[in-house]
Image 1 (cartoon, rainbow, N blue to C red):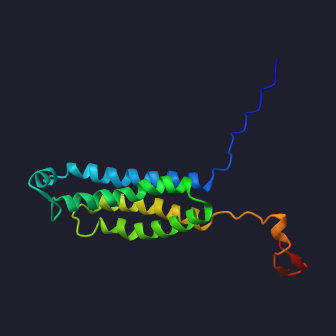
Image 2 (image 1 turned 45 degrees about the vertical axis):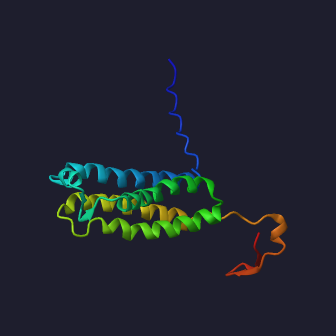
Image 3 (image 1 turned 180 degrees about the horizontal axis):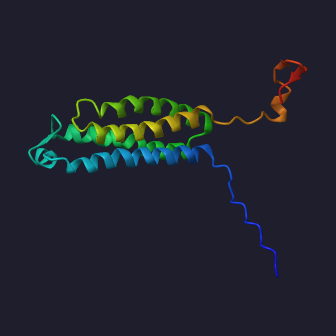
Length: 165
């Protein structure tokens, strides 16, 4: 009789911050698009579009270009999150996610379908807050040996003087 084999541990390698950010922006993009697509099922929406009205706006090239530009923001953030250098990536994600939160909340203003749009906004904001948290807490690397000699001297309580490495 053989002894049972212990279950293998699952591999849980760290995921690069840029990949986490790209995944979160992908989620924002899909939520953004699907809320708009599912909204076509609201009574009167398609009739309004066929009559040339979206919400209270006339359907025009300007309106559709604006919609495209707004949808392009999370799309480009997916790409930028995996291509920008860390410092620029962090700053870009902090700025754009901060701007996107009030924009997401704007979608529920004046809507009678508050459960539907409210859930969409809450889910988008959760992802945007996750983006802010990932970007804000981006891990720092220790300075190299060449820059360590230029590092400031720091005192640590109970340990005396310490040179940052």
